[in-house]
Every structure is written in structure tokens, then in C-alpha cells.
Length: 314
Image (cartoon, rainbow, N blue to C red):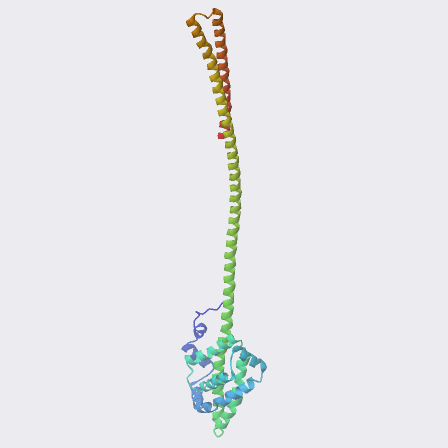
């Protein structure tokens, strides 16, 4: 994860005009040193391209360095142009926040490209090797100016190196902070996923429980349907019994009515004897017995039906 909303490099490092003044004081980089460098600006401009060319003649003789440049997508032509301009800037006499921001950018860029400080710091030897002889030659008749010229250059390059290294180190600090933030985010994501998986497991358990309950309800429904079916069969049988009972009643009544009608006819014609009357009474009694038996059967049948019906309701 990269953090794009960070403050500027100078803000992160607490570098401001007041801080730059403090740094210059620590390096004993005085106004006199600034004036010496400004006096050498024309000499620097005249020799910048040649020094940059010799600088990279040496640098490109190392395969490891070349590999780093190729990996970063750089070209020698572009590097020489940038180095020539930087050499000129060392003598412009203006070492303010704009100048410091450029040095900080170089340090940050080296970190992003994976170019270790040894290449950056070691490169200054090339400057010293090619510049100092030129300075000595310039002041061949003014020996008292040679040392101040060399010291002024050493101080400004040391000032640059400090800024570059701090920016390079800040790159590592920010990278580590990003990695820590990534780990924390992954931990939060894992915790969230764990909670979600726990909820899914709980849901699955509840679903399984609901399925078992539903299966039990289906079984109970089946049993209820079976009970209702059995009750319906019992009710049908009871209805058949009632029908049979009614038929028996009809037969018994018919049997009662037939002798009575016959007796009426006999009485009207006065041809029936007293013995036949006794037979009629006997038959009447038998018919009443049959009615009583039929009523009892009907009562028993109704009683059985009622029991089954109550059982079904339970």
C-alpha cells in the first residue's frame, strides 16, 4: 500500500528556512563561502558538460551501476544532462528551500529506484577529482584563494549529502509504515472474515435445526392425515351401520303394521277368532323386541363412532 496524501518531504523532515539556516551554521557554511562559489560559477558552467561526461565514463564502467540505471529506465544522455545542470547549481549562490527541495527529491528518487547511497556518495569523488585541479589552475597566481575555494565546495556538497540521505532514509521509514499499515489492514480483514464465517456457521446450524423441525412437522402432518383418514373410514362404517339399523327398523315397523292391518280387517268382518287375536298380541310383542334390539345396536354403533371421533380430535 502506498500513501499518496503524505505531506511534502521537507514537511515530513521538518525542513524550513529556519532549519536550513541552522544546517548551514552547523556546517560553518558562511556568506563568504557563498561568495567564493559564486565567483567560480563561470568556471563551473564552462566545465560542467565535460565533468559530467567523465563522471559517467567512470560510472558506466561498472556493470552493477549500469544494470541499476537500465532497470530504472534511465539513459546516459539524460543522466549527463541532469548531472551537468546539478554541477552548475552548486555554484549559483542561492541555497534556499527550492534548492533544498531538489536535493530531497533526488534522495527520494534514489530510494524508489533502489540506488543505494554508495553510488550517490561515491559520485562526489568524481567531482573532486575533476574540479580541484581546475580550481588550482585558476588560482595559480593566488594561492591564498585555493583552499577557500576547495573548502566552500566541500561544504556545499556536504550540505547536499545530508539532505539527500535524510530523504533516502525517510523513504525507508515510509515504506515500513506502509507495510505495517498493510499488515494491520489484513488483520482487520481477517478478523472481519472470521466473524462472517462464524455467522455463516451459526446460520447453517440454525438452518439445519429448522430443516429438522420442518421434517418433524411434516411427519406430524402425515400422522394427522392418517388419523383423519382412519376417522373418515370409521365414520363411513358408522354411517353404513346407521343405514342398516334404519332398514331393520323399517322391517320391524312393517312387521308390526301388517298384523295390525290384518286384525282390523278381521274385526270389521267379525271373522277373526279370539285365538288369532292372541297371536296378534304375541307378534306385536316380538316386533317390539326387534325394535328394542335395533335401537340398542344403533346406540352401540353410535357409541363406537363417538369414541373414534374423540380419539381423532385428540
